[in-house]
Image (cartoon, rainbow, N blue to C red; front, side):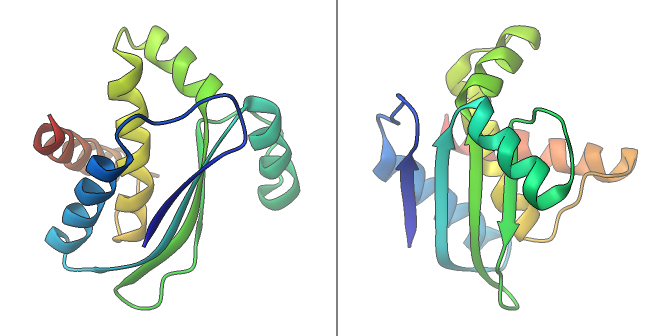
Length: 136
């Protein structure tokens, strides 16, 4: 089950469509949907998690906590709406597209994709684009 939670003044307008899209992505990647929580928050909220749990004293757009069991996807994905908004401006893209990119990025990590090396990041970006095209 996919849950959307809000710790800031923001709310998705199409939760059902997005939940179906996320599930279809998981299935296409050969995995099974478990319990996934999306928590939309602000920079301060996510920065605190970044320092406390990852020992990173920086701002970020997304942090995911992976509780997957084999191919069954479980996890908590925290997204800073403020950071996504700033990134959309920096990347000269629409906020909605960028929030969707971050949403699917977290799930792709759970499906086994990494982004630490250049080649891994390129594959991740390709997967993001592919699944974004399925949503649009």
